[in-house]
Amino acid sequence: MTCRFVLALIAGFLAWADAPLMAQSRGSRRGDAQAVKNGWLFNLEEGKTQARTSGKPLMVVLRCVP
Amino acid sequence: MTRIDNADLNLFEFDYDLTFMVFFLNADSEVYARYGGRDAKNADSRQSLAGLRYTMQSVLRTHESASKVFARKSGDAPRFLRDVRGSRRSGRCMHCHQVKETLNANLRKQGKWSRDLVWRYPLPENLGLELEVDRGNLLRQVREKSPASVAGLRSGDMVQRLNGVPIHSFADVQFALDRAPKAGRIEVVWRRGKETLTERLTLPEGWRKSDIRWRPSMQHLIPSARLYGDDLTLDEKKALKLPAQRLAFRQRDSVPAQARTAGVRPGDIILGIDDKPLEMDVNGFLRYVESNYLVGDRVTVNLLRAGERMSLSMHLLR
Image 1 (cartoon, one colour):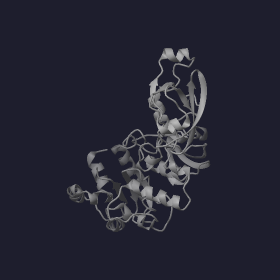
Image 2 (cartoon, chains in turn purple, blue):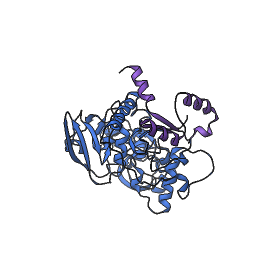
Image 3 (tube, chains in turn yellow, brown):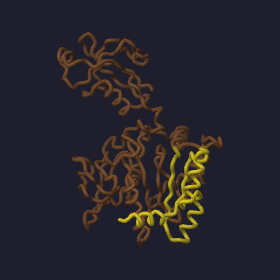
Image 4 (tube, helix red, strand yellow):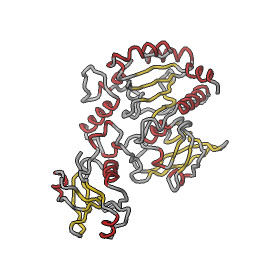
C-alpha cells in the first residue's frame, strides 16, 4: 500500500473529535486549530451532514488530551 | 462538541476507563465498528497504526457493500450523562472514567449493582481467542482446551460476528463480550478461506474476570493484602518441608490493623490464602491478591506458627 493511498483513505473519513479534557486545557487550542486545518471537525452534526452529502462514513475519535 | 457529557452514551458506548476510542458510523448514527482498547500490561499493547488502517479498510468495504451490518445499541433513544441520576453538573470537563463511576453509582442507588459488573469488557483470550494487533479480527492463536478451541476455531481464522456484533477489531470483540451473559453460550461466525463457519462458544464459570488494576474507575475496589515480610530462604523452606517454589514469607514486626484483627502476629510464616498452593514470592503474592480479590472479600490466611499450620479469617480492605 502506498503512503498516498493511506492518506487518501484517512482523508476519506469525516472526523469529529470529542476530547473531554480539550475544553479544560487551554494549551490544547493550538492543537485544535491544527486538527481543524487537517480536516478534523469538532461538531458531530456537521460531520453527519457532510457524511450524508458525500456518502462517506464518519470516523469519530474520543480521546483525553494528555 | 468537545464534552463527553454532551455525547449520546447509547451511541458512544465503550469502555469508559479508556482514554482513546474510535467509532466508525454512517450518517444515520449506525455503528460499523470501534477501534481501541487495552489490557493491564500497558495502554498500547492492543493498538497499532496498521491495526487502525486495517479496521478502516474493513469498515470501508462494509460501507460500500449492499448488505451492511451494524452493531446493535443498548438503546435507540439518546442517553446523556446529565440525565443520569447523581451526575454532577459542575460545568467542568470530566474524564471518561468518571462517566463510568457515575453510571455505576446510579446502578448502586437503584439496587442494580452486582459484583459481575466489575469485569466489564472482558479480554478475548478469556475464551481462548488471541487476536492479531495489526489485523484485529484475525486469530493469531487459539488457546488449547479453551471454549474457542472446543468450538473449532483455529489460528488464521477471521472472526466475522460474535454474539451478534459484526467484528472488525479487538474493540468490537470486547464490545460483543461485554454484552454476553455470565454463563451460557454465544454464537460465533468466522471465515476460513472461502468457508463461513458458525458455532457456539460456551462461557465457563468466571470467564469475564480480567485484571482490573489499570482501571481508574475500579481503584477503590482493589484490595491490599496487608501482609508483608521477607521470603524464606531455600534452607528455611527445606527445614519446614516446603517445596522450593512455594510461597512462604515471614511476616515482619509491623502488622497492620486489618491483619492484626484477623490474628496475624509478627514472625508468622505466611503460606497463602484460601488454601491455594501458590508458587510465587511475597511481591507476587501482593499482585495476586490485588488481581484476584476485591475490597470487602473475606479470605482465609494460611500460615505456620511455631511449626503448626493455622487458618485465619481476614477481611480485605484497600
